[in-house]
Length: 153
Length: 172
Image (tube, rainbow over all chains, first blue to last red):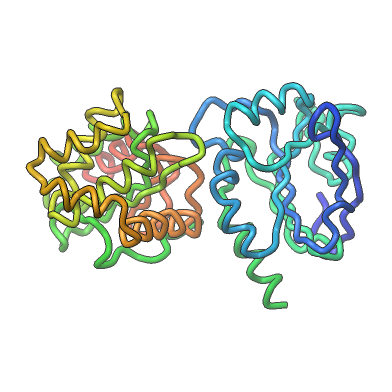
């Protein structure tokens, strides 16, 4: 897993069937990359739903949150509409898990991304990373602490 | 381990004896079905461990997911300004299945609140700030879903039933 100080590998993935998003698009902004195993976890403690509610805290630190899983764009589209999400979900779908592997957070055994967080600074360097147990939603406090620290540095 | 930020203070709604040794804080959403399931279990805990625990509720409305969550939180806070927070908190959970824009006024009427004042307070900046302040405290405290519980300031890894089991075990 890539850690603090490493350069974040650039990537370009589909956010919707006809829109591609690359990390370089966000140069000048802090980026929160949230890798997660799969869309449609059946609870209110859904990690993406939580970040949807905490976006206003992230934007105070000029940070954009992006979700990444191996689900397809069509699955993301339905999930995003169902949960009323206001940030992009990227499909690490083809070649499967390529970006998750580049960040060192692909679970080969189950064929899904691990539940991992990266805060990437405005120059594209990793400022903080965190690997969460797969079953546990890591919340947003670690992200906010990392963004706060970035502002102090 | 995530800890409660800020600690329980005068802005909180506290049920039970202030001197009780065990402090349980719930971050809850009035439209969340899991919070509804937790509600009678918390009541049970309050009876079982009367005098030993105090219970605090902070608002964590998932407003993008639950249409009435924020209005429900505002309604409970508005009732608090007339001394009826817990009555409204309980009434909303008991009527969760029929949440609507009109329900809160009906419940306020049932509790004998001054309805004009209630309406004003629901829409006030003060009440909105209280709900948003609770939400931010939850985010800072590592709330990752609802309900989330904190026992004596430490995040509790489990739901209401786990909480009851833990208390039962520590009482043995």
